[in-house]
Amino acid sequence: MMRLLPWLYLAAMFTFIYLPVGVLVLFSFQDGGLPVPPVEGLSLRWYADILTDRRLVDALTNSLIVAISSGAVAVVLGFCAAYALARHVLPGAALLRGLLIAPLTVSYLIVGLGLLMVMNRLGIGLSLWTAGIGHVVINLPICFAIIYASMGAQHKNAERAARDLGANEAQVVLLVTVPMLAPAILAAFFLSVTLSWDEFIIAFLLTRFDVTLPVEIWNLLRSGLSPRLNAVGSIVFLVSVTTVLVLELLVFRRRRS
Amino acid sequence: MNARRETLRGWGFAAPALIWTALLFVVPFAVMGAMSLAVLDGRTLIWGLHFDNYAALTEKAYLLRAIFVSLEITVTVTVVSILLAYPLAWVIAFHVPPRWQRLVLLLTILPFWTSYVVRSYAWLLVLAREGVVNTALTGLGLTAEPVTLASTRFATVTGFVHFFVMLLTLTIYANLIQLSPNYRRAAMDLGASAFQTFRHVILPLTLPGIMTGAFLTFVLCIGDYITPQILGGNNELTVPQVIMVQLGRRADFPLASALAIVLMAIVTLAYLGFARWLRLDRV
Image (cartoon, rainbow over the protein chains, first blue to last red):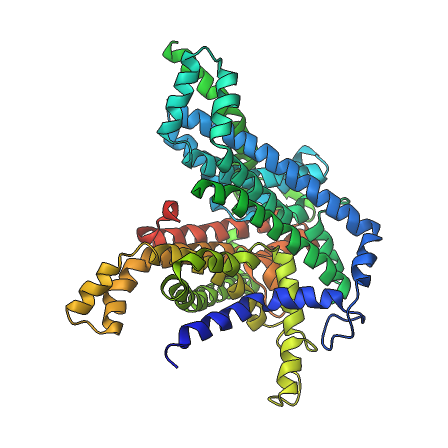
Protein backbone atom coordinates (compact mmCIF):
# COMPACT_ATOMS: atom_id res chain seq x y z
CA MET A 1 0.00 0.00 0.00
CA MET A 2 2.74 2.45 0.99
CA ARG A 3 4.57 1.66 -2.24
CA LEU A 4 1.49 2.52 -4.24
CA LEU A 5 0.76 5.76 -2.44
CA PRO A 6 3.00 8.02 -4.58
CA TRP A 7 1.48 6.67 -7.77
CA LEU A 8 -2.05 7.04 -6.45
CA TYR A 9 -1.28 10.65 -5.59
CA LEU A 10 0.19 11.25 -9.04
CA ALA A 11 -2.92 9.74 -10.63
CA ALA A 12 -5.24 11.80 -8.41
CA MET A 13 -3.43 15.05 -9.24
CA PHE A 14 -3.40 14.28 -12.95
CA THR A 15 -7.15 13.71 -12.75
CA PHE A 16 -7.54 17.09 -11.06
CA ILE A 17 -5.28 18.84 -13.58
CA TYR A 18 -6.87 17.28 -16.66
CA LEU A 19 -10.49 17.20 -15.47
CA PRO A 20 -11.52 20.64 -16.78
CA VAL A 21 -9.59 20.27 -20.03
CA GLY A 22 -11.02 16.78 -20.55
CA VAL A 23 -14.58 17.93 -19.93
CA LEU A 24 -14.08 20.94 -22.20
CA VAL A 25 -12.84 18.86 -25.13
CA LEU A 26 -15.19 15.89 -24.60
CA PHE A 27 -18.35 18.00 -24.62
CA SER A 28 -17.18 19.99 -27.63
CA PHE A 29 -18.13 16.80 -29.53
CA GLN A 30 -21.52 16.69 -27.82
CA ASP A 31 -24.33 16.02 -30.26
CA GLY A 32 -26.95 17.56 -27.95
CA GLY A 33 -27.44 21.23 -27.13
CA LEU A 34 -25.88 21.30 -23.66
CA PRO A 35 -22.26 20.61 -22.73
CA VAL A 36 -23.19 18.52 -19.67
CA PRO A 37 -23.69 14.78 -19.10
CA PRO A 38 -24.95 12.57 -20.56
CA VAL A 39 -22.98 12.54 -23.81
CA GLU A 40 -25.66 12.22 -26.46
CA GLY A 41 -23.44 10.95 -29.23
CA LEU A 42 -20.39 12.43 -30.86
CA SER A 43 -20.44 14.91 -33.70
CA LEU A 44 -18.41 17.72 -35.20
CA ARG A 45 -21.44 19.94 -35.70
CA TRP A 46 -20.26 22.62 -33.22
CA TYR A 47 -16.92 22.93 -34.95
CA ALA A 48 -18.73 23.33 -38.28
CA ASP A 49 -20.99 25.82 -36.54
CA ILE A 50 -18.18 28.11 -35.37
CA LEU A 51 -16.41 27.97 -38.73
CA THR A 52 -19.49 29.54 -40.33
CA ASP A 53 -19.78 32.17 -37.59
CA ARG A 54 -18.28 35.38 -38.95
CA ARG A 55 -17.69 36.97 -35.55
CA LEU A 56 -15.81 33.98 -34.15
CA VAL A 57 -13.68 33.48 -37.25
CA ASP A 58 -12.88 37.20 -37.24
CA ALA A 59 -11.96 37.09 -33.54
CA LEU A 60 -9.73 34.08 -34.18
CA THR A 61 -7.95 35.86 -37.05
CA ASN A 62 -7.61 39.02 -34.94
CA SER A 63 -6.06 37.02 -32.11
CA LEU A 64 -3.53 35.42 -34.44
CA ILE A 65 -2.59 38.77 -35.98
CA VAL A 66 -2.22 40.47 -32.59
CA ALA A 67 -0.27 37.55 -31.09
CA ILE A 68 2.20 37.18 -33.95
CA SER A 69 2.78 40.87 -34.61
CA SER A 70 3.03 41.88 -30.94
CA GLY A 71 5.34 38.91 -30.35
CA ALA A 72 7.55 40.00 -33.26
CA VAL A 73 7.77 43.62 -32.05
CA ALA A 74 8.47 42.53 -28.46
CA VAL A 75 11.22 40.15 -29.55
CA VAL A 76 12.95 42.73 -31.80
CA LEU A 77 12.83 45.45 -29.13
CA GLY A 78 13.89 42.98 -26.45
CA PHE A 79 16.78 41.69 -28.55
CA CYS A 80 18.13 45.17 -29.33
CA ALA A 81 17.94 46.20 -25.68
CA ALA A 82 19.63 42.98 -24.55
CA TYR A 83 22.37 43.46 -27.15
CA ALA A 84 22.91 47.04 -26.02
CA LEU A 85 23.10 46.19 -22.33
CA ALA A 86 25.16 43.01 -22.67
CA ARG A 87 27.68 44.30 -25.21
CA HIS A 88 28.07 48.00 -24.48
CA VAL A 89 29.05 49.85 -21.35
CA LEU A 90 26.17 52.21 -20.64
CA PRO A 91 25.99 54.55 -17.66
CA GLY A 92 23.26 53.48 -15.22
CA ALA A 93 22.96 50.02 -16.78
CA ALA A 94 21.46 48.49 -13.64
CA LEU A 95 18.76 51.14 -13.58
CA LEU A 96 18.00 50.60 -17.28
CA ARG A 97 17.66 46.84 -16.73
CA GLY A 98 15.32 47.57 -13.83
CA LEU A 99 13.21 49.87 -15.98
CA LEU A 100 12.91 47.28 -18.76
CA ILE A 101 11.91 44.51 -16.31
CA ALA A 102 9.50 46.70 -14.31
CA PRO A 103 6.26 45.89 -16.22
CA LEU A 104 6.65 42.25 -15.12
CA THR A 105 6.02 43.21 -11.51
CA VAL A 106 2.68 44.88 -12.21
CA SER A 107 -0.56 43.01 -12.80
CA TYR A 108 -2.05 43.00 -16.32
CA LEU A 109 -5.14 44.82 -15.07
CA ILE A 110 -3.02 47.79 -13.96
CA VAL A 111 -1.02 47.89 -17.22
CA GLY A 112 -4.31 47.86 -19.15
CA LEU A 113 -5.94 50.47 -16.93
CA GLY A 114 -3.00 52.87 -17.26
CA LEU A 115 -2.89 52.52 -21.04
CA LEU A 116 -6.66 52.94 -21.29
CA MET A 117 -6.49 56.28 -19.48
CA VAL A 118 -3.62 57.51 -21.67
CA MET A 119 -5.45 56.50 -24.85
CA ASN A 120 -8.59 58.23 -23.61
CA ARG A 121 -6.76 61.45 -22.83
CA LEU A 122 -4.95 61.48 -26.16
CA GLY A 123 -8.20 60.73 -27.94
CA ILE A 124 -6.78 57.58 -29.55
CA GLY A 125 -9.58 55.20 -30.47
CA LEU A 126 -9.45 51.66 -29.14
CA SER A 127 -8.66 48.97 -31.69
CA LEU A 128 -6.56 45.86 -32.24
CA TRP A 129 -3.59 48.24 -32.44
CA THR A 130 -4.03 49.43 -28.87
CA ALA A 131 -4.46 45.83 -27.64
CA GLY A 132 -1.28 44.88 -29.55
CA ILE A 133 0.60 47.78 -27.93
CA GLY A 134 -0.53 46.55 -24.52
CA HIS A 135 0.69 43.05 -25.31
CA VAL A 136 4.11 44.36 -26.37
CA VAL A 137 4.35 46.22 -23.04
CA ILE A 138 3.85 43.00 -21.06
CA ASN A 139 5.97 40.75 -23.33
CA LEU A 140 8.94 43.06 -23.90
CA PRO A 141 10.36 42.45 -20.37
CA ILE A 142 10.09 38.68 -20.85
CA CYS A 143 11.84 38.80 -24.24
CA PHE A 144 14.53 41.08 -22.86
CA ALA A 145 15.15 38.87 -19.82
CA ILE A 146 15.33 35.60 -21.79
CA ILE A 147 17.65 36.96 -24.49
CA TYR A 148 19.81 38.96 -22.06
CA ALA A 149 20.33 35.86 -19.88
CA SER A 150 21.58 33.86 -22.86
CA MET A 151 24.11 36.46 -24.07
CA GLY A 152 27.16 34.84 -22.53
CA ALA A 153 30.77 35.94 -22.92
CA GLN A 154 31.55 33.02 -25.26
CA HIS A 155 29.46 34.70 -27.97
CA LYS A 156 31.37 37.92 -27.54
CA ASN A 157 34.54 36.39 -28.97
CA ALA A 158 32.79 35.25 -32.13
CA GLU A 159 31.46 38.79 -32.59
CA ARG A 160 34.95 40.24 -32.08
CA ALA A 161 36.37 37.79 -34.61
CA ALA A 162 33.75 38.80 -37.17
CA ARG A 163 34.53 42.46 -36.56
CA ASP A 164 38.28 41.81 -37.01
CA LEU A 165 37.51 40.11 -40.31
CA GLY A 166 35.88 43.32 -41.49
CA ALA A 167 32.17 42.82 -40.77
CA ASN A 168 30.27 46.01 -40.01
CA GLU A 169 27.92 46.32 -37.02
CA ALA A 170 24.79 45.27 -38.92
CA GLN A 171 26.57 42.22 -40.34
CA VAL A 172 27.86 41.24 -36.90
CA VAL A 173 24.37 41.42 -35.39
CA LEU A 174 22.48 39.75 -38.21
CA LEU A 175 25.02 37.13 -39.30
CA VAL A 176 26.71 36.25 -36.01
CA THR A 177 24.74 37.28 -32.91
CA VAL A 178 21.22 36.44 -34.09
CA PRO A 179 22.04 32.92 -35.38
CA MET A 180 24.01 32.11 -32.22
CA LEU A 181 21.11 33.20 -30.02
CA ALA A 182 18.41 31.64 -32.20
CA PRO A 183 17.14 29.25 -29.48
CA ALA A 184 16.64 32.07 -26.96
CA ILE A 185 15.10 34.38 -29.57
CA LEU A 186 12.65 31.68 -30.70
CA ALA A 187 11.81 30.80 -27.10
CA ALA A 188 11.07 34.46 -26.35
CA PHE A 189 8.95 34.77 -29.49
CA PHE A 190 6.84 31.65 -28.91
CA LEU A 191 6.34 32.52 -25.25
CA SER A 192 5.14 36.02 -26.22
CA VAL A 193 2.80 34.60 -28.84
CA THR A 194 1.23 32.18 -26.33
CA LEU A 195 0.85 34.83 -23.65
CA SER A 196 -0.74 37.29 -26.08
CA TRP A 197 -3.01 34.61 -27.56
CA ASP A 198 -4.35 33.70 -24.10
CA GLU A 199 -4.47 37.21 -22.65
CA PHE A 200 -7.87 38.59 -21.70
CA ILE A 201 -7.96 41.69 -19.51
CA ILE A 202 -5.70 44.01 -21.54
CA ALA A 203 -7.43 42.96 -24.76
CA PHE A 204 -10.80 43.52 -23.07
CA LEU A 205 -9.92 47.02 -21.86
CA LEU A 206 -8.14 48.16 -25.01
CA THR A 207 -10.37 46.91 -27.83
CA ARG A 208 -13.81 48.04 -28.87
CA PHE A 209 -15.42 46.69 -32.06
CA ASP A 210 -12.82 44.25 -33.35
CA VAL A 211 -11.96 41.96 -30.47
CA THR A 212 -9.63 39.03 -29.83
CA LEU A 213 -10.83 35.48 -29.22
CA PRO A 214 -10.70 35.44 -25.39
CA VAL A 215 -12.82 38.63 -25.35
CA GLU A 216 -15.32 37.15 -27.81
CA ILE A 217 -15.53 33.99 -25.66
CA TRP A 218 -16.23 36.20 -22.67
CA ASN A 219 -19.03 37.91 -24.60
CA LEU A 220 -20.55 34.55 -25.53
CA LEU A 221 -20.27 33.32 -21.96
CA ARG A 222 -22.96 35.74 -20.87
CA SER A 223 -25.55 33.62 -22.66
CA GLY A 224 -24.53 30.56 -20.65
CA LEU A 225 -22.97 27.16 -21.27
CA SER A 226 -22.97 25.89 -24.83
CA PRO A 227 -21.10 23.19 -26.78
CA ARG A 228 -20.09 25.95 -29.20
CA LEU A 229 -18.06 27.58 -26.44
CA ASN A 230 -16.48 24.18 -25.77
CA ALA A 231 -15.47 23.94 -29.40
CA VAL A 232 -13.92 27.45 -29.42
CA GLY A 233 -12.26 26.81 -26.07
CA SER A 234 -10.80 23.55 -27.36
CA ILE A 235 -9.34 25.38 -30.36
CA VAL A 236 -7.79 28.05 -28.11
CA PHE A 237 -6.31 25.32 -25.91
CA LEU A 238 -5.02 23.38 -28.92
CA VAL A 239 -3.24 26.43 -30.37
CA SER A 240 -1.60 27.28 -27.01
CA VAL A 241 -0.48 23.71 -26.45
CA THR A 242 0.87 23.40 -29.99
CA THR A 243 2.93 26.57 -29.52
CA VAL A 244 4.32 25.30 -26.22
CA LEU A 245 5.15 21.89 -27.70
CA VAL A 246 6.87 23.50 -30.69
CA LEU A 247 8.86 25.58 -28.22
CA GLU A 248 9.81 22.47 -26.23
CA LEU A 249 10.79 20.40 -29.27
CA LEU A 250 12.47 23.12 -31.30
CA VAL A 251 14.28 25.05 -28.64
CA PHE A 252 15.00 22.89 -25.64
CA ARG A 253 15.70 19.63 -27.47
CA ARG A 254 18.24 21.36 -29.65
CA ARG A 255 19.93 23.00 -26.73
CA ARG A 256 20.39 19.64 -25.02
CA SER A 257 21.92 17.80 -27.99
CA MET B 1 37.00 52.54 -32.51
CA ASN B 2 36.69 55.14 -29.79
CA ALA B 3 34.71 54.55 -26.65
CA ARG B 4 32.33 57.45 -27.17
CA ARG B 5 31.08 56.14 -30.47
CA GLU B 6 30.76 52.70 -28.95
CA THR B 7 28.58 54.03 -26.11
CA LEU B 8 26.49 56.04 -28.56
CA ARG B 9 25.85 52.91 -30.59
CA GLY B 10 24.81 51.13 -27.39
CA TRP B 11 22.25 53.85 -26.71
CA GLY B 12 21.02 53.46 -30.25
CA PHE B 13 20.25 49.79 -29.70
CA ALA B 14 18.71 50.34 -26.26
CA ALA B 15 16.66 53.40 -27.24
CA PRO B 16 13.59 51.78 -28.87
CA ALA B 17 12.86 49.48 -25.92
CA LEU B 18 13.60 52.21 -23.37
CA ILE B 19 11.37 54.75 -25.13
CA TRP B 20 8.63 52.13 -25.51
CA THR B 21 8.73 51.27 -21.80
CA ALA B 22 8.93 54.90 -20.73
CA LEU B 23 6.05 56.10 -22.93
CA LEU B 24 3.74 53.11 -22.63
CA PHE B 25 4.44 51.87 -19.14
CA VAL B 26 5.96 54.63 -16.98
CA VAL B 27 3.79 57.47 -18.33
CA PRO B 28 0.50 55.50 -17.99
CA PHE B 29 1.55 54.55 -14.51
CA ALA B 30 2.19 58.18 -13.60
CA VAL B 31 -1.17 59.15 -15.13
CA MET B 32 -2.82 56.49 -12.98
CA GLY B 33 -1.09 57.88 -9.90
CA ALA B 34 -2.27 61.40 -10.70
CA MET B 35 -5.75 60.09 -11.52
CA SER B 36 -6.00 58.43 -8.10
CA LEU B 37 -5.64 61.91 -6.59
CA ALA B 38 -8.31 63.46 -8.79
CA VAL B 39 -12.02 63.46 -8.03
CA LEU B 40 -15.11 63.05 -10.12
CA ASP B 41 -17.72 65.79 -9.79
CA GLY B 42 -20.70 64.49 -11.65
CA ARG B 43 -19.08 63.67 -14.96
CA THR B 44 -16.28 66.23 -14.84
CA LEU B 45 -12.84 65.30 -13.70
CA ILE B 46 -11.12 67.61 -11.22
CA TRP B 47 -7.37 67.14 -11.02
CA GLY B 48 -5.42 68.05 -7.93
CA LEU B 49 -4.22 66.62 -4.67
CA HIS B 50 -7.45 65.17 -3.33
CA PHE B 51 -7.31 62.16 -1.06
CA ASP B 52 -11.05 61.49 -1.29
CA ASN B 53 -10.55 58.20 -3.13
CA TYR B 54 -8.21 56.85 -0.48
CA ALA B 55 -10.46 58.13 2.28
CA ALA B 56 -13.35 56.29 0.60
CA LEU B 57 -11.50 53.03 1.21
CA THR B 58 -12.03 53.41 4.92
CA GLU B 59 -15.46 54.98 4.68
CA LYS B 60 -17.21 52.72 2.22
CA ALA B 61 -17.68 49.24 3.64
CA TYR B 62 -17.84 47.47 0.27
CA LEU B 63 -14.36 48.68 -0.69
CA LEU B 64 -12.78 47.49 2.53
CA ARG B 65 -14.73 44.25 2.20
CA ALA B 66 -13.29 43.71 -1.30
CA ILE B 67 -9.74 44.04 0.03
CA PHE B 68 -10.45 41.45 2.72
CA VAL B 69 -12.15 39.09 0.25
CA SER B 70 -9.17 39.38 -2.10
CA LEU B 71 -6.70 38.71 0.69
CA GLU B 72 -8.69 35.77 2.07
CA ILE B 73 -9.01 34.13 -1.33
CA THR B 74 -5.36 34.75 -2.21
CA VAL B 75 -4.01 33.38 1.08
CA THR B 76 -6.28 30.31 0.91
CA VAL B 77 -5.26 29.63 -2.68
CA THR B 78 -1.55 30.03 -1.92
CA VAL B 79 -1.63 27.69 1.09
CA VAL B 80 -3.78 24.99 -0.55
CA SER B 81 -1.69 25.12 -3.73
CA ILE B 82 1.55 24.61 -1.78
CA LEU B 83 0.07 21.69 0.16
CA LEU B 84 -1.05 19.98 -3.05
CA ALA B 85 1.98 20.84 -5.18
CA TYR B 86 4.73 19.82 -2.76
CA PRO B 87 3.88 16.09 -2.69
CA LEU B 88 3.35 16.15 -6.45
CA ALA B 89 6.78 17.70 -7.07
CA TRP B 90 8.20 15.17 -4.60
CA VAL B 91 6.70 12.17 -6.43
CA ILE B 92 7.98 13.47 -9.77
CA ALA B 93 11.47 14.18 -8.41
CA PHE B 94 11.98 11.01 -6.34
CA HIS B 95 9.63 8.31 -7.61
CA VAL B 96 9.34 8.86 -11.35
CA PRO B 97 12.42 7.39 -13.15
CA PRO B 98 14.77 10.22 -14.23
CA ARG B 99 14.33 9.61 -17.95
CA TRP B 100 10.57 10.10 -17.68
CA GLN B 101 10.68 13.11 -15.38
CA ARG B 102 10.86 15.74 -18.09
CA LEU B 103 7.86 14.27 -19.88
CA VAL B 104 5.80 13.91 -16.69
CA LEU B 105 6.64 17.50 -15.74
CA LEU B 106 5.71 18.75 -19.20
CA LEU B 107 2.36 16.94 -18.95
CA THR B 108 1.79 18.31 -15.46
CA ILE B 109 2.03 21.90 -16.59
CA LEU B 110 0.54 21.59 -20.08
CA PRO B 111 -2.96 22.89 -19.12
CA PHE B 112 -1.17 25.87 -17.54
CA TRP B 113 -0.99 27.27 -21.07
CA THR B 114 -4.69 27.89 -21.38
CA SER B 115 -6.37 31.24 -21.38
CA TYR B 116 -7.80 32.25 -18.00
CA VAL B 117 -11.16 32.63 -19.72
CA VAL B 118 -11.17 29.15 -21.22
CA ARG B 119 -9.90 27.51 -18.03
CA SER B 120 -12.51 29.25 -15.89
CA TYR B 121 -15.24 28.29 -18.35
CA ALA B 122 -14.05 24.67 -18.22
CA TRP B 123 -14.34 24.69 -14.42
CA LEU B 124 -17.80 26.16 -14.73
CA LEU B 125 -18.75 23.11 -16.81
CA VAL B 126 -17.28 20.76 -14.21
CA LEU B 127 -18.97 22.46 -11.26
CA ALA B 128 -22.30 23.43 -12.86
CA ARG B 129 -25.59 22.20 -11.40
CA GLU B 130 -25.93 19.64 -14.17
CA GLY B 131 -22.15 19.26 -14.48
CA VAL B 132 -19.84 16.28 -14.19
CA VAL B 133 -19.25 16.50 -10.44
CA ASN B 134 -22.92 16.77 -9.55
CA THR B 135 -23.85 14.00 -12.00
CA ALA B 136 -21.24 11.77 -10.35
CA LEU B 137 -22.37 12.67 -6.82
CA THR B 138 -26.07 12.02 -7.44
CA GLY B 139 -25.27 8.99 -9.61
CA LEU B 140 -23.30 7.41 -6.79
CA GLY B 141 -26.11 8.27 -4.41
CA LEU B 142 -23.88 10.48 -2.28
CA THR B 143 -26.28 13.39 -2.46
CA ALA B 144 -29.97 13.38 -3.29
CA GLU B 145 -29.97 16.87 -4.78
CA PRO B 146 -27.26 18.57 -6.87
CA VAL B 147 -24.93 20.66 -4.71
CA THR B 148 -24.40 24.34 -5.51
CA LEU B 149 -20.73 24.51 -6.49
CA ALA B 150 -20.61 27.18 -9.18
CA SER B 151 -20.92 30.86 -8.24
CA THR B 152 -19.32 30.27 -4.86
CA ARG B 153 -15.98 31.09 -3.32
CA PHE B 154 -15.24 27.37 -3.45
CA ALA B 155 -15.41 27.53 -7.26
CA THR B 156 -13.09 30.55 -7.42
CA VAL B 157 -10.57 28.88 -5.12
CA THR B 158 -10.74 25.60 -7.09
CA GLY B 159 -10.14 27.40 -10.38
CA PHE B 160 -7.16 29.28 -8.95
CA VAL B 161 -5.68 26.26 -7.15
CA HIS B 162 -5.81 24.26 -10.38
CA PHE B 163 -3.72 26.92 -12.10
CA PHE B 164 -1.22 27.54 -9.32
CA VAL B 165 -0.63 23.89 -8.41
CA MET B 166 0.98 23.60 -11.85
CA LEU B 167 3.14 26.68 -11.29
CA LEU B 168 4.23 25.64 -7.79
CA THR B 169 4.98 22.08 -8.85
CA LEU B 170 7.42 23.53 -11.35
CA THR B 171 9.25 25.81 -8.88
CA ILE B 172 9.35 23.20 -6.10
CA TYR B 173 10.48 20.45 -8.48
CA ALA B 174 13.30 22.70 -9.77
CA ASN B 175 14.41 23.12 -6.17
CA LEU B 176 14.06 19.46 -5.10
CA ILE B 177 16.04 18.16 -8.06
CA GLN B 178 19.03 20.34 -7.13
CA LEU B 179 19.34 18.78 -3.66
CA SER B 180 22.19 16.38 -3.29
CA PRO B 181 21.00 12.98 -1.96
CA ASN B 182 23.92 13.23 0.47
CA TYR B 183 21.98 15.61 2.73
CA ARG B 184 19.30 13.02 3.22
CA ARG B 185 21.84 10.23 3.76
CA ALA B 186 23.81 12.31 6.26
CA ALA B 187 20.67 13.11 8.28
CA MET B 188 19.63 9.44 8.26
CA ASP B 189 23.14 8.35 9.29
CA LEU B 190 23.02 10.73 12.20
CA GLY B 191 19.88 8.99 13.39
CA ALA B 192 17.12 11.28 12.13
CA SER B 193 13.79 9.66 11.37
CA ALA B 194 12.26 10.12 7.92
CA PHE B 195 10.03 12.87 9.29
CA GLN B 196 12.87 14.64 11.10
CA THR B 197 14.97 14.52 7.94
CA PHE B 198 12.17 16.14 6.02
CA ARG B 199 11.30 18.70 8.68
CA HIS B 200 14.84 19.82 9.53
CA VAL B 201 16.81 19.19 6.35
CA ILE B 202 14.75 18.92 3.16
CA LEU B 203 12.03 21.45 3.94
CA PRO B 204 14.40 24.32 4.85
CA LEU B 205 16.45 23.62 1.74
CA THR B 206 13.39 23.76 -0.51
CA LEU B 207 12.03 26.93 1.06
CA PRO B 208 13.33 29.11 -1.82
CA GLY B 209 11.37 27.03 -4.36
CA ILE B 210 8.22 27.15 -2.24
CA MET B 211 8.49 30.87 -1.59
CA THR B 212 9.25 31.81 -5.20
CA GLY B 213 6.17 29.89 -6.34
CA ALA B 214 4.12 31.26 -3.46
CA PHE B 215 5.05 34.84 -4.31
CA LEU B 216 4.16 34.39 -7.99
CA THR B 217 0.88 32.77 -6.90
CA PHE B 218 0.11 35.65 -4.57
CA VAL B 219 0.80 38.31 -7.19
CA LEU B 220 -1.05 36.64 -10.06
CA CYS B 221 -3.97 35.57 -7.89
CA ILE B 222 -4.70 38.90 -6.23
CA GLY B 223 -4.57 40.75 -9.57
CA ASP B 224 -6.84 38.42 -11.54
CA TYR B 225 -10.28 39.56 -12.59
CA ILE B 226 -11.63 36.80 -14.77
CA THR B 227 -11.49 33.75 -12.46
CA PRO B 228 -13.57 35.25 -9.62
CA GLN B 229 -15.84 36.95 -12.17
CA ILE B 230 -16.69 33.70 -14.01
CA LEU B 231 -16.57 31.23 -11.13
CA GLY B 232 -17.40 33.29 -8.05
CA GLY B 233 -20.61 34.87 -9.25
CA ASN B 234 -21.49 38.23 -7.81
CA ASN B 235 -22.04 37.25 -4.18
CA GLU B 236 -18.76 38.80 -3.12
CA LEU B 237 -16.38 40.97 -5.12
CA THR B 238 -12.60 41.00 -5.18
CA VAL B 239 -10.56 44.18 -5.71
CA PRO B 240 -10.07 43.64 -9.48
CA GLN B 241 -13.83 43.07 -9.84
CA VAL B 242 -14.58 46.31 -7.97
CA ILE B 243 -12.09 48.14 -10.23
CA MET B 244 -13.91 46.84 -13.30
CA VAL B 245 -17.28 47.87 -11.84
CA GLN B 246 -15.96 51.43 -11.37
CA LEU B 247 -14.84 51.52 -15.00
CA GLY B 248 -17.97 50.00 -16.47
CA ARG B 249 -20.93 51.40 -14.67
CA ARG B 250 -19.75 54.81 -13.56
CA ALA B 251 -16.55 55.50 -15.51
CA ASP B 252 -15.06 56.45 -12.15
CA PHE B 253 -11.44 56.37 -13.21
CA PRO B 254 -10.14 58.15 -10.07
CA LEU B 255 -11.52 55.53 -7.68
CA ALA B 256 -10.44 52.70 -9.99
CA SER B 257 -6.92 54.16 -10.04
CA ALA B 258 -6.79 54.47 -6.27
CA LEU B 259 -7.85 50.82 -5.94
CA ALA B 260 -5.18 49.82 -8.45
CA ILE B 261 -2.56 51.68 -6.39
CA VAL B 262 -3.77 49.90 -3.26
CA LEU B 263 -3.45 46.58 -5.09
CA MET B 264 0.12 47.50 -6.01
CA ALA B 265 0.88 48.48 -2.42
CA ILE B 266 -0.34 45.06 -1.22
CA VAL B 267 1.87 43.31 -3.80
CA THR B 268 4.86 45.43 -2.75
CA LEU B 269 4.29 44.53 0.90
CA ALA B 270 4.06 40.88 -0.10
CA TYR B 271 7.32 41.22 -2.01
CA LEU B 272 9.05 42.66 1.06
CA GLY B 273 7.65 39.80 3.13
CA PHE B 274 8.83 37.15 0.66
CA ALA B 275 12.07 38.91 -0.34
CA ARG B 276 14.48 37.03 1.91
CA TRP B 277 13.59 33.71 0.26
CA LEU B 278 13.15 34.81 -3.32
CA ARG B 279 15.49 33.43 -5.97
CA LEU B 280 13.58 34.55 -9.02
CA ASP B 281 16.61 34.22 -11.28
CA ARG B 282 17.04 30.56 -10.38
CA VAL B 283 13.68 29.35 -11.60
